[in-house]
Length: 347
Image (tube, rainbow, N blue to C red; front, top):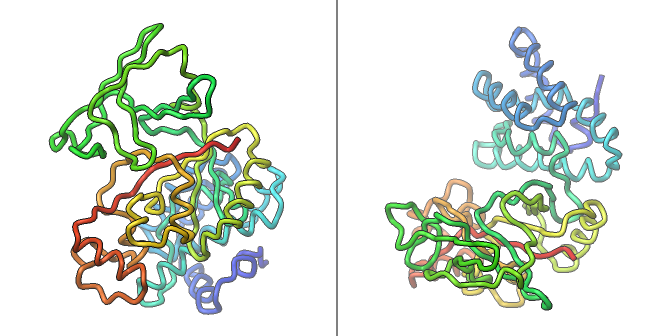
């Protein structure tokens, strides 16, 4: 019986046939039956870690078609979970559309073959841990980043400080300890707090600590505080009104959460060097107070040039967009691009 998976998520006829044909092979395996049972229970319990692990094990054992087969088979369990959580169908469909998006991403980079490899990410959607509300996706989870956010008493000013033992390069960005120019320190008692301040515009950490009167500081969030992590699905422009509308929905859906947090190439202050100050991406970037995050390859390379792009590829890349040309020029001029973290208050 059709459970809505193909029609609701908009798979092509070829993708549907690929998944259905593969299922004829998988159903002969005892491992498949065990995985289905475990996967359904993980969905019921909203256990995204187990759900992701099962999808990954199936990917490893049977190939990239298997996760789609497993999700298709258990799609009724996913829909039941959303119903039990009183999440309206429109939000469920918008959220689960990421499955089709990442299936298409796989096809674009694998000769139009059908498959899904972003299994741990998609498991969070299947378990309703991430919800798409308008243009943006939202995920309640602990901040986890090694920073504290304070509001200064009797003002709207926010101060971000780094926790101790964060390795930073000469410019104040995260690096490996053996490459670091300084390691942050933090000292506090009942009256005073001494720590390294984070520049909210550039997202880097001051090399020298600053002394604060603790009585003047009110902690908004630290690594253990549950915040609203914001994710940016591909496919649509970040128009300001659409972002505002999405945030309005998030405030209503998650009224207990005060802080929105994001990690993305779209928070990199260097974007102002390659895009117009009035552009959607720069306006989005400027909503956030920045903080540094560790990364290997800047996310901008894969998102602007393609998921196979590396730093070595960019100078010779056949640029076809204004942003690609601008990034190439900036790299030649010595600009460093970074994946950045950032936050703003939902109040």
